Amino acid sequence: MIYKKELNSNKKYYIPKRIIVAILTSFGLLISTVIQTNFAITNSLILNPHYSKDIPIDDYQLPNKSLKLNWTSVQLGYLNSIFYLGYLLVHIPAGFLVHKLSATKIFLFPLLILFILNMLMPISISTITSKNNLNYYITGLVRLIQGLCAGCAFPSSHGILANWCPPSERGRMGGFIYTGLYAGPVVGFFLGGFIAKYAGHYSIYYASAILGLIWSLLFVYLIYENPREHPTICDEELFYIEKSIADVKYIYNEKETNSIRKVPWKIILISLPVWAICLAHFARGWTFYLLLTNQPAFLNAFGFGVTQNGTLGSLPHIMKVLIALLSG
Image (tube, rainbow, N blue to C red; front, side):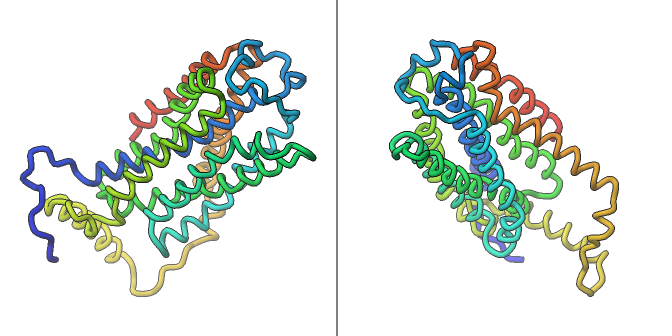
């Protein structure tokens, strides 16, 4: 196997490219989750006081305080649900596209659309006429598309991990990358509370989107589909990554026959360990997204202000970050 000429291998401050890939991939997941907290924070702030009697008066003394929408908690629940409907539907198709196309492109471009749509959320909520609840339906459409875009990030991150991570490091690197999912609510709730109080609750949409656009530029400039395409990777790292992945593929192929391997769907579907994993993942997802979407409204009912709400809302997710890092 022919490798590139020596590049950076003797540099004192050379940072392994796979580490940069892991950091930016984790930040992409982080920002996508920050955006999911935006609507949760504004839920209680945009409700008509008739439907939110327990929210402290101080929380309405915010920039944009004149906006009051007659959206009930049930309607807001539908807006939350439609995002995750799109999020759920796209997971399997995105996984297939990663194998057919490019993991980095399937990761980047849907997130870019997600960021742009986040800047349009305040417009869909407030600027468009509210006659016949048109703004509600437009917001629902935007939320659905956002869910479809956000849902591509998780399966495509697996593809990036497979291309860049040596098998011996996948536990640690995978744990670090997916920590971004749990760090997102920490950043989103904590900073979102202060931004909402001092700059207006619509500002959190713009701040998250701008952060996402900056990340997109860095991702385009620094991340490549695989190590061999990277122009500044050193020979040592390239050899290490490719050899590690090739060794595992060789061992795997040695155990297989020349015939095409069929997926044992029946065995999978009747396997108790598989169902145990599915149930555990469902329970984890249920609690995670329940906190992500309803925690601010729940804390508001107990009289916490918007900044206190954000601070308290970030605490459970801080523990998730620590556990995810330690378990990796």
